[in-house]
Structures are given as C-alpha cells and as structure tokens.
Length: 78
Image (cartoon, rainbow, N blue to C red; front, top):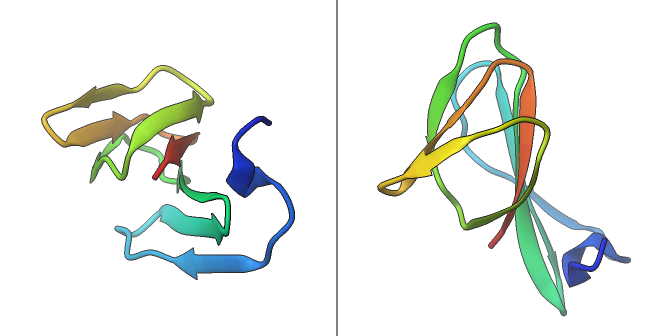
C-alpha cells in the first residue's frame, strides 16, 4: 500500500505477455509498478520487470527471469 503508484491515477499500459498471462504497467507522477498474473494451469517464465513488491505465492526470480506458478500474481516495483 505504501508504493506511490498504487494511489490515484489512470495510466495503465498493457504489456506483451504469453498466452494465459496478463501484464500491465501502472504509472503515476510518483512512480510505477508492473503486475503480472499467470492465469494458466502451468508455471510460466517471464522477464523480471523490476523488484518484487508482493506475490500471491513464492516465486523464483533470478538471472533476469522469474517463474510464476499457475494461478499466481506478482506486483513489481518498476
């Protein structure tokens, strides 16, 4: 809740993502974050868009990529 981009603002940009994954960037004058949601039934590896802020489950970031388990979401400081 303390991240500035979680406050008021309307700037959302949908980002390219594989099938079954939603990804968007939220930007305000105070900062931005990226949200990635894996709606698929299997894990998916994605480039890490920043530092994890919050995750619905444990993720395995490393070497510029992270594995998102099935049915999980991660919010990243971007």
